[in-house]
Length: 44
Length: 497
Image (cartoon, rainbow over all chains, first blue to last red; front, side, top):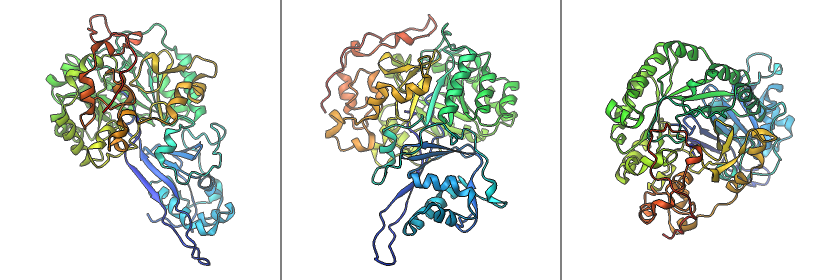
């Protein structure tokens, strides 16, 4: 594709954090990912 | 600016949020960035920020688990760093101004609330979206040039092309779906007498416009009119830094016309337009010169891959870059992440470090094409019956095609690596470009003909001309354009690496 987007991807992966009481690791989450779609268009 | 979760924030007024099954897509009309919000809770949080004195107050109001507040704070900080969120100096309860194209009042289905943990962005995009990320809309088959690589075999206007009223209805459908912007191509879009009427309607309905032109009809007056419009990008096609190289592909006089159009845009104060180059065997060595030209105009350089689509089927074998040139291009791009490629060269990622991008085929998943008569295809490079998903003239229009096309459903399903499964680079290149394989007669579940490992060349050498699929049903070339390798399509060859 010109498809497939993008181009710059910037993943914001949050690091595991700990619970104060039980020192329990909170599941890692990938909440935001950025992509640059400028230039995607599929035309010459 | 450092993100302060104790200060009021809201969504930037030029940001549109579109609900998706995994959360939402957010598009910023100023900086052209697209962000995936990969959690329905995050979407609800972002959407509510304007109503709270601080993000932390919003965490509390949303009932978010305090153990996860730091995760959300990092996510919001990232959004703020990309200007998707902005501090509120005045009363935050006044709320944000919906951005252009903001479909959050109605529009696409809201997130289901299903967990997306453990899935990649690529996985989520492969399974489809509520609307395309990138929709190419060809406005006419008429063209004042006859480029040898034209992917839509344009030249003559089709008598069944959409009239103005239907074009405006399509724009309404885009607005209802929350399409952020459309890429206008052709043919030459400026040949439509209603060009500005439709562009202005797009902008009025909150649909951004990027249009591609050969520049031949882009007068000083038109450049000034475009420069005065918001949410309109212009892309000038140039396939050689000099007349000899460019005009061999795009026709005599086309280089001078393109340069004159660039002059007009510069003189009109348009800003950073794009110079768009299709990479061929004859211009790969001009990469540095193209970059210098873009710098001279304050423009952005966009490179795209040459596909054997349309008339390109006739010229691809002679003009597509060599393996050595592909390697040179790959390393040149790695050093210049600011050069736009639209993810066009993801097949090159098998050479090592991945090029910036999603590195997947987006056909029917995140992109599609609408041709001048309203037919919808999986991607801009597959104007062929086999990849036609429907028509905007069907009941339900474009939205129904995007949601319910059996072809799109198939493309969004699991894909087999096929013959590429035994190659260690499949995860990097994903088997390459579907259109490029199809129009060279190679099986879709095998290697790309330009596979950097050489597997495609081996297969291609054994492909008879008779296996190359025809594109004649959508050919609008002038009668004088030679059409050579266009026989009928038989079943694809089996592929074994």
